[in-house]
Image (tube, rainbow, N blue to C red):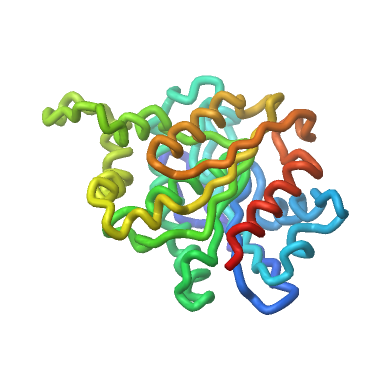
Length: 291
């Protein structure tokens, strides 16, 4: 599918093709993994296959019953690079994550809606058992994946179910401070809508239903039992490790259990999986969720 470019901050729904690696044995689980900015599903899949475990196996070889699904983002206009490029949303700056936040919101909303449909398709393929589907990704893909994860626990969401797990690498949580404030039990909500800024209203519109659901936890404690793995390079030159730590802290404060690992010496200036240690850790983490 040819992706249309966006020449404004508006996101396009023209998502690219989905690259799939079929299981080598009877299909038992699915991993949906999202690429970073400037890449696509097929390229990310190949790079991941080149990153082998310590026993020289690839992840599909280590987990032969798994189906590996690699969606592709649309192409969006980058205000930072001044060109069209593959991206799940427009991120103007990662050195100042609060800069031009208005540009991020359309893409996040559109990508979450799209990824909901991909998740639903894979859950249906596995007989409706959502616990057999894992969501994750790297960098910007993992960032929008975490938003999709949080939406999956919301009342009224197409996915008010527990996923098998979430796996993220070299990532951050967009609007992390605003999300933390939304879920802070000690925060005082203003009834005066004029005092809420645009970002707070956006966060509340997508994640407010989850907050309401967690306030009445009957049936939603399953969502909080979704295990999360986050790995990050201590020398990541593109996404500072402090942003990864913030993502871990926010998810933990919401109530999710996060396994956090830090690595040094990864390729691509620290902005990639540490091979083989991180790939081993991910394989071991995924093995623990298998029923």
